[in-house]
Structures are given as structure tokens and as C-alpha cells.
Length: 208
Image (cartoon, rainbow, N blue to C red; front, side, top):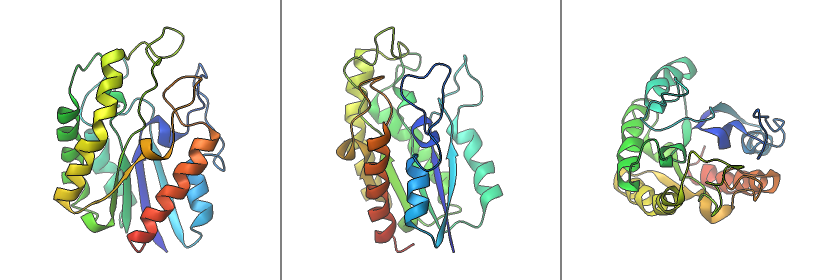
């Protein structure tokens, strides 16, 4: 049985769009749970956390820095046969004020750690969903602004170049689904289904 880590943010955790406080889709609705049902000979290890970034510490919600939590996760879940990593949406928040290039540098620091446990040829790097045009509205997520949307659109090309250079498999979530119109940020149920199928193809290409 293959052990495959899914390391990400609220779109891996399975946040139901628009819920405050946050609520979570049932496991069978989340893309990780769907993927598990499609891969009975593998174990999909869910490691999603709302607000998780690549390298930035959120002063309002401590403990969201991916680079800090990834090493312990890898050790506790070792041995691993493969990994899926999807981060970057939260890095687009105005509080960080960084470019897509800088977010790419952050994801690479996570990949440096990940590669100590999982071969690059068995790693699927995923660029996240594009933020919707109205995500910054007060009733949605005002931690973003219009520039955040632009940065989210630039992540695909940055991440794809990283994947090519490092010998990783690559998938753009923005090619598969759009965020729910409810919050312009998260997968809806149909998005989880579509994304799970796309990840399944990537897993098969990695021969896991």
C-alpha cells in the first residue's frame, strides 16, 4: 500500500464556502476523500490547515506557516511513497504584500524539505485556484484585495517553471475548477470532484 501525503490549506481541509465559523465538507465530499475511494490500494494522508502559507507567519493566526509544520509532518508520517502539495492562496493576502515570484520562492523552501522524504518524481506540485473577482468584498474575504487576484493568476506559470526545473509533476487547480461564487476562494462540491479526478491522473502518472 502506498502512503501519499496531501499537504495544503483550506482547500485541502475541505472548507465549505461561505461558512462562518468555518465548517468542513464530509470526508466523502472532500477531494482527498474522493481520491481515497478511487485508490483503495493507497492511503491518502490529509494534512490541510485553514490559513496555511508557504513561509509566512500570520500574526492574527499563529501556526499557519507551512515550512514550520512540514518537517514534523513528514517525520510523523514517514515512510511516504508520494506527496501532493498545494499552497499559495493565503500568501496572496494583503498582509504579506508579496509577488507570485516570491511565493514561488516560498514553495521551493517547502520542496527542499519535502525532497528529503519523497523523490521529486513522486511529488505533485499544484498551483492553487485563481481567486474570484469579488473575493475582497467585505462579505467574502477582505484579507485579499484586487492585487491579490492578479497575483493568484500568476502562480500557475511560476509553479509550472519550478516543477519543470526540479523534475516534479505539475497540476494547475485553476485549469480544473473555479472557486465557488459564494466566497470566490474555495472549491464547491463539484470542484472537489473535478479536482480529485485530475489528481488521480497525476498519481497514475507517478506510478503510485
